[in-house]
Image 1 (cartoon, rainbow, N blue to C red):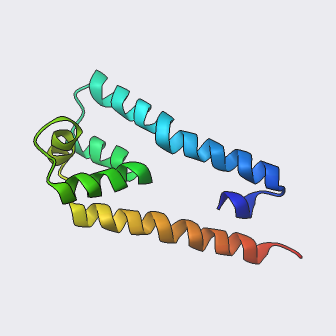
Image 2 (cartoon, rainbow, N blue to C red):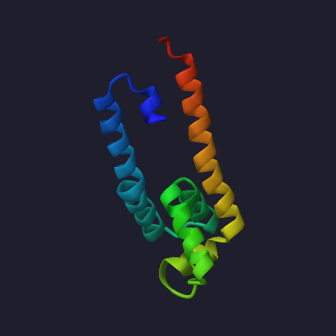
Image 3 (tube, rainbow, N blue to C red):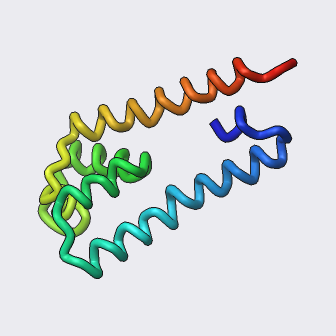
Length: 110
């Protein structure tokens, strides 16, 4: 989507790096800070996880390995997010941006 929306290659690269930094670092820090500072319901933790494809992948891996007895695995298990729901979210994170990029490319003038 970033590449399809950008007008220059350098803008696409810069925006892609910014998106990566957001999903890998900033989103997790904000989510952990919010969850640690307030007693939020499990639905909020689930929403934070589903809003980040890296976290969705992490949930799938933790669910597949059965690591839910301590740490992040226990927090995710208490949020009620199952592996099939996480897998569906990951598929959506793949399909929707590709569809949006296709629309953006289709609207470009050559």
